[in-house]
Image (cartoon, rainbow, N blue to C red; front, side):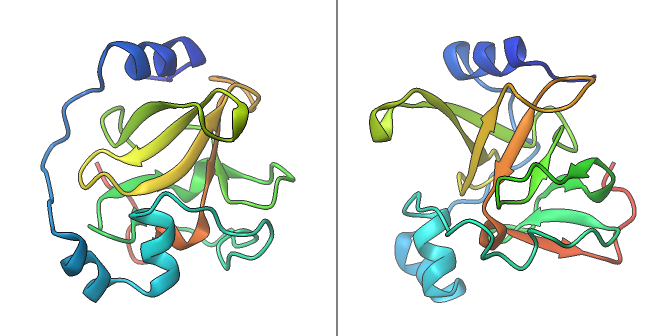
Amino acid sequence: MTLTWKDIIHFATHGNPQPDRRVEKSPEQWQAQLSPEQFRITRAHGTEAPHSGALCSSYEPGIYKCVCCGEPLFDSTIKFDSGTGWPSFTQPIRENAIRYRKDTSLGMIRVETLCNTCDAHLGHVFPDGPSPGGLRYCMNSLALELDKAAKDAS
């Protein structure tokens, strides 16, 4: 299934698909597991500076996973250069991999993306991506890890 902006708005407004599993930890447990910058971005909803992430310009094959829980999120075959300075993808690996939430911070309305398994802040999704779905998942590099050995998460 190819998700569209209409699907994303529906999820953000009426509820997200159920994840396959849940991972829940205390802030102290996440802090012990993650670097200070990973914690700031994923658990405190921060943003890394554009063009600063190691995964921004990497196009190696593999599966991009959540740095917090290891859940597969994106396949490298749908990564593209959006020119924004953050890793960008057209679709999640599965419909229920990402959770969507309306974000009204910074005086604008956006849709925040979170790992549907552990609620890690990943970035935002926008309706200005390439076909077929027209989506641009703009992710923080530090929220992801590239598993080069993984070929297919399904």
